[in-house]
Image (cartoon, rainbow, N blue to C red; front, side, top):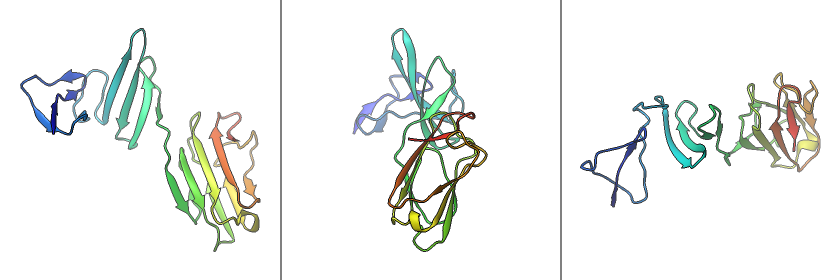
Length: 175
């Protein structure tokens, strides 16, 4: 074990406070509040000279890591590689990838998230190569898909679809 100082809301613990942790470990306590940090967040600030500081934080409200800059109140979830296997109608989650198995079904509804933000993504993979034999629908959930107010039927087998959200005018786009 190595000994390092702890950081709490930007303040180092006094030198006489020693805590045993693994080497190269930084412990942040999200329960203590300090300047610019509310309860439920633990963050690391990376100062970059005259450029806005880069911030990496853990948001306990949505259980996600996020990145942002000190000159903005906008934070984005860190790109993930979460994969889920589904074989029932599902409300899809932003920034999540799905293996979809329609082997024993006649149809499946893949419902887009209700509140996407600019740059949110979804990936869908026909894991059993049967989309062409089934009724597989991407339901728009009141957001446009490719500038249109229509749901999409996926009717090609053995495909993978990637979508990114642009804005309320153009909606979800295939990429």
